[in-house]
Image (cartoon, rainbow, N blue to C red):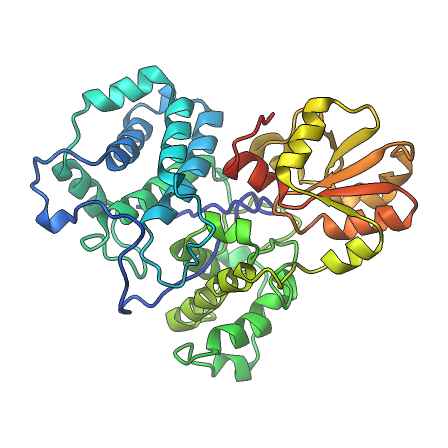
Length: 399
């Protein structure tokens, strides 16, 4: 089975995240389905297993029944569902929605529609079907599907859906630009505490920033980590995201430059940022400067209230990339400017309105918001980005 692992950062349209050691002692996840080794082959699946496997079967056998927008949204909605079953002990569960499984199963069913949900129910899927699916899909680095069958199932289903939205023609590894790694970095084994941070700062920071909050994408942000598993990030670091020929920014392939241990240590380091964000004293890069410049920060529910009120003295300014604005979605009625064009088009914005800046992850728009405030505009900022509006809260979204 080809592994695509398309990234949801949409600086490539989707890019991935971090980790736990494959042989580490792993505490039970929030919730686990009965293990495959103890379940009868004829035993019916749990509701989430039935929905996930059924959706994968529809995709494989009745692709024409699914519109592209459905495929994309299903790929997004299966992502956070994995977190319920992920056995990763490095995850910070505090703050997670206790109803996450019900919430996303409901969204998946609504996206499929009643007819396709009925078709899945008529499949009468069992553990034999699930085991066959898992066996055919091979393995995942650090995942034993016999120990964590539901998690592995969701991982593969996410990948199946993402393969459908990957560019048909992508840049081959041999055609990607080379990337120099100093011998001092290559000597870091990836097996010792602190190795992941050293490797990230020495290898990855050139694009992602020393603090991981760069625009290519901000791989340590809470909203980003919540949508990505360690195995996705491992595959992305190893092979790079699928990118179209001519892409302005191309991520190198590191499979021939870093060992599995080195890649895995980078992935593990990224996951440690969940603990960083769990401490309210830690704030994102640029937040102090933006507040000092006069930028007013809004919660997502506050922005929804402003949007519903249709205030004439407010302009919602979406600074996502073209593909994110169109396919990932935007607040209905928002004005879109490409992030790279904000400087050139700033003078076109009205100074008699409050400009509320919106980005994807709640990080990339801080610098433009600060620049607008310093140029004399009244500026607000949606603190948690479109990922919170769309994926976490399921607020009205246009495509």
